[in-house]
Length: 223
Length: 266
Image 1 (cartoon, rainbow over the protein chains, first blue to last red):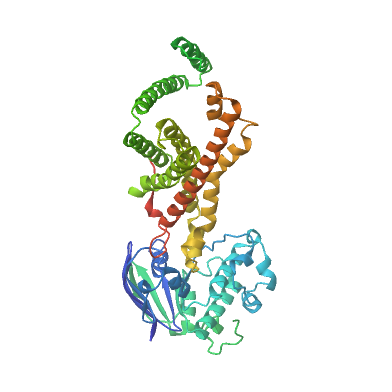
Image 2 (image 1 turned 135 degrees about the vertical axis):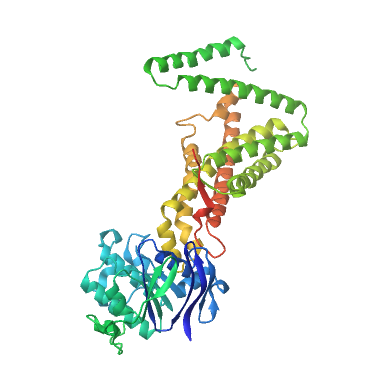
């Protein structure tokens, strides 16, 4: 049973888009700047008015209040935003030290001042903040955009485990074709507002340098 | 009791304006013309309202007083809208401030007329119109400041607000900080005015009454009454206007809808 279905979804110059993402599947979208990747994610998260429908496990977005939908279909924006002074205030339910550790962050990171954090630290914390709510679907807008190689590998690994353990559906926007090949089962290009599926020309691409991201055994569960 | 002013008296005072205009010309301030025009407007507008009030006092009928009040609140509503850099599109732009002022200023003024002053008839224009004017003028300021802050903050902090929505927070939680700040901004001037009254400034109403021969303590009592009414009108008006405005920034799906604002051209 597909977890997330988009039917004729349209927002501004994007769409209509039909797409099913199965539980436990990761779909990657690439596209030129301004092609509307972020707009598509915003429409799915119901942050912008849009036409068409998004359905999660048979329940339409329109059938539940906006916040309830967004807790299940969580958008992680490219630029994390912070409204309180300390990191911990953005984690109402706290954060397990194991999850912090998996992203290379110390256990006391929740006590940090946001202003003191580097861009990369903020990006990883913003991702964790959303993961702690255990959404069924993750809409990821360049989740490793500001990260170095090591942190990127950590994020890919953590998201891979999350996907398997929670049977979560991931829609991952990335600029990097190699990352798309590593993390996604299906890959699309967003061109002229339409999704064009990319061929499976290089089958070995799924398990390249960061092989553990696709490892079937979950290893140490962080939640 | 009142020492009547002659045209000559006013003309003498007008010399001050002309002298100031002369200084502006000499220093090249470039505001001489505006100064003279404004002074002329003050003269004409106040003379006109004097005539209107004279007519109103002579015909103290409820409908006339109500009509006057309606004109005042419409003008105030337009003024609130004109002072917004970003206003709500459609009827909301005018309706939001006007409705809030109607709810707060009218209630406060009518309550004071009925319960506190209890004149007969309660709508006696000599009391009703000046009271409403003072409450309305200050409420208008508070609402204009509060709404302007609300829409400015919402636009400037759009990314933060949307990030909070994306985390599944509801609109109320998302906008709470901004709303609180906007209400505070609207209420600060009257709070400051009350704190400074009598020490730094002698409020105009009281001064006027004293000049007109009222015993100071009586004038002070009225001033205290008016201060409280103004504070009540401004406070509740700002709360209503900013709360309604904050709600209007989000739609039924609890999305932030900044497209419901448009930036004024001027």
